[in-house]
Image (cartoon, rainbow over all chains, first blue to last red; front, side, top):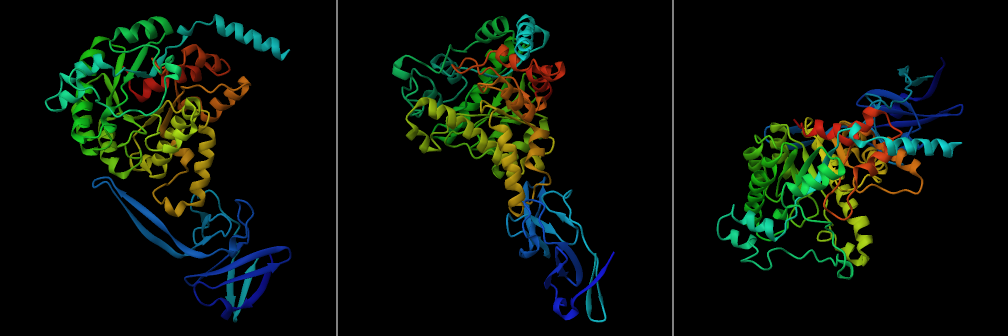
Length: 122
Length: 368
């Protein structure tokens, strides 16, 4: 396990901020999601697309009421969903799962802020 | 050596009586000819009775608009089915079929006037029960619906569900007023079916009224190869992507006469669409393939005819014996004999063979 100082904390202090860092041959995206930090490889398991370069967004959820036979859609997880720029696979950064198939997950890396440094642990 | 093994298998198959498995035929058509219409009309009130009775109405139905009798010499009908004997003799006595599930391609979504369509489907159901289904224990029927009026369709299911010989409900795809199979306005129908533990059955028609591009193909064969498969693909796609199996998890769905060769490709295609457009399909909790494998069944007719029989084996394996249901399509010209299906099942386990020929239908339709 190795620790890497990758940025000043100010560079990623606002929810929605992101950093793309390269360590050795690895590209890693670091995201501030509502004040929590998440780091994932810049790689989509679908067709090797640059996942972390995609837009951060929310997504739709739906419930179906079997009494009234009505479907209600709601906007959820705003700022928590990373959408691959290649084929729009939706990745839930908080849950570490792709929304269409929760069995598909990514390696994740701990991130900590210490003395104004962003430290990535590989 | 492979060849002699194949020959040995072939000889074994030829010698193996089909009767070693029960056969349920999931798709037998009652012929809606003048004779039947005259009888159905007696179940109706004026004024619509006069529309249906051929003696009082000369142009009762919109033209199909397709020159299907090639040179006037070929019909889509091998023969007519208008009485129980028309099923028992050719299918039970001739083909070795043990049970048949009857339907009638519904005029309810084809005729212009809604009220007439509703009354006519109701009269057809009553006639079918009295004339066809009550006559023989192994004749079962599907409740003919008009999808254009979902509330009426749900009432029709409630009205007839207690009749033991009605074992499902029947939509005729591709007709002008039939909504897409997964249209949320049909939810009331699916709710009724789930309430009565009856499956939803869909049968293709040529689709050319909804898809006029099919007319431009000129050849009957070109239309017949595309239109029905397309109608089945539309229904399957609509059902899954509108989330009908998620909304009604206990419901089972049967697609008839769409063929099966395209099904494996469609599983993969729908999975891919789902992964790329999931936010548009938030009701889905599983992949399209999972929903289809869990709750959908495909009538085997018309069987695809690959040059390499191995490809048929692959097709059956990819769809799975659990999802296939043998159907003849009697009395139409593109029917399949049970032996044609059975020939392809020789490589499969006995229980898989039995499920395709009879077991899946027996379970889904809960045949006595």
